[in-house]
Length: 133
Image (tube, rainbow, N blue to C red; front, side, top):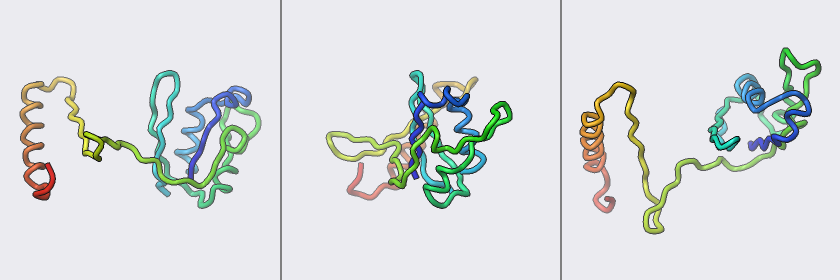
């Protein structure tokens, strides 16, 4: 299911995107994820759901302690059936490619992390089929 929140409607009923995240955390089987851009930031939202249909999800109530009256999700968002949003696609010379990111934890030695990454990459490459680089 796809939930398309209209950020302009949220203030009208005293909600923000965090309130929608609370609803998703509370009421929403794993159904893929989505990328939301807001104020120059990107959020990936994945959810677990008790709702089995788009209508059930649209009628999930947005009830928070500081709001007088519960509102259905459909007040601020469109909910419909859709395909899972693909995250992380990459291409090289017009062909699909695999892209990875190495992350270094705070306090780690950058040179040691780079060496470890290169070793892990070499090991992964050795397991690829012969027709893949």
